[in-house]
Length: 329
Ligand code: NAD
Ligand code: UDP
Image (cartoon, rainbow, N blue to C red; front, side, top):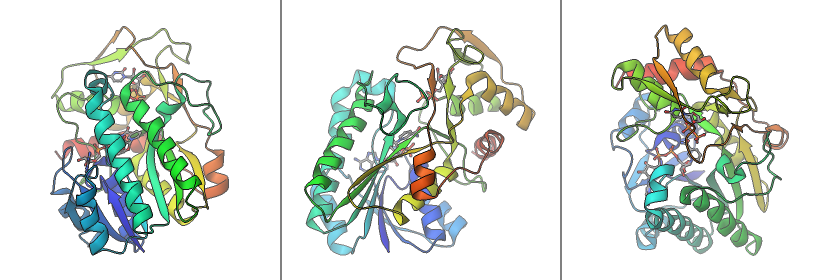
């Protein structure tokens, strides 16, 4: 079974490549290295004993994709490649629409042209907007506060419409909650460019002394302690979720939440990080960040019932592994 992993040198893609290679899949990566480095391939090799085949290719460029599909018999596509900086997408929407939508379209065209039966797409809990928690896959998709989120909704639609009229192609849309953590080896993890926007990379950089203080955005939400609540998921659990989705793929279009089903507040995450790693994280409580929802966590029953997948790692594991990776940088 050969799997094309777009964005495979990135954060979630690299962990998924490790899990797939360890399970015996033939992994081919396509990534233009916009937000990742080539040495991730050596790190994947150190962990698994096997270096995946790599194409430095832009997935929004159909000609570059043709080369890959002509040279390899691809059985499944796992499409991670895309831009993901929410704030940046507000300032330069066309950059996001172009890259994320054209990538999805070009890959879907290749899936049809080269008769690839399985397509898995990296979507996000952001498609639920500010709906009621826990989010279920059947919830309505709400307009996003940013172009990044819109590219997820639109990509889901593009792939669903395509699969509906092409019975040879099945599509699984995976809606991730908040991936954090890193591989236990400390070799691969999330490497943000510039100052991080997301909570965990910010915490680890404060822990390391690269940043002085964390800002906690808002303490007046209707939550357990007033701070935002999120469903943090260990990236390795998330990677196993992809393998389960691949192996249990059903005909047609199917959607699954990938989360733990449990909400953790910003303050709870900070306190767990401090306790597990024995480090103090200085923080100030500041105003809410525009566009943030109070609570976001998944109903994960569908993934368990249909894919036989659930998470195994704790918030403690996530905090320990995130810090171990950051220390190794
Ligand atoms: P990442 O930036 O670490 O990885 C994405 C990879 O895609 C990078 O290696 C980048 O170089 C590559 N890429 C971008 N545009 C490309 C293009 N046109 N052609 C080829 N390669 C390209 O991001 P990640 O955190 O691993 O996220 C993977 C996917 O999951 C993304 O689609 C993201 O939107 C989605 N997602 C991420 C999160 C999260 O919190 N990390 C949450 C929900 C959904
Ligand atoms: N957050 C914070 N300080 C930061 C970054 C994030 O308080 O420096 C909060 C944010 O307001 C939200 C939660 O942490 O409640 C998760 O934010 P993140 O950006 O990691 O993920 P999101 O859920 O927004 O995709």
